[in-house]
Length: 262
Image (cartoon, one colour):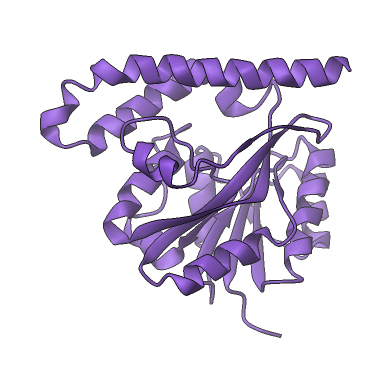
């Protein structure tokens, strides 16, 4: 059996067992194409979720209860032979062959530190609402516009992720944006428009329910990565970007409500 090459990190509070099981099945399906280690970070008291993860062969790690970034970093600490990192939420999905596609892109691109693909937005019932596949435009917009690189559906070289210190534990919403911006110093970003993942859009999603706080944190992260001369004038584009992001989110929510209504 080959050594694992991909470290899949899955944090969960253990309160969404039905979608967690669906996610675990989606991760299991990736094993047909790639060798991976699944690390599930869960609170010690989330007995049912921990037992479910163990049945899928996951390495189960205690949630340090210090925020999402710290939980992911705890998952990264479980690295052994893996070369690549991928993240999945407990209600998100990898599409069939998704991790293989991303792995193959990085295999062909030694200059690339990160690869990402298309990501479908799905409603709580799993119906597709829309698709994000901005491709090269996402890398252009990353430093100052909306973050169109989906965290589920992104693969990163672990050596580079460790070099930047993992994810900032002070961040609650924009830890992936911060990491992506830091990773630019270590290599290029590669992409495919093929769909490799699905993000479940529902009312209790962290970044949907707390959109204003998420926007403010993202803006602060982008400012600190800008050249010093541009930080003071970033307000000129941050409010139009905030409005455009809210408009896009509202359209996705309206589409989800329409699907739910039949």
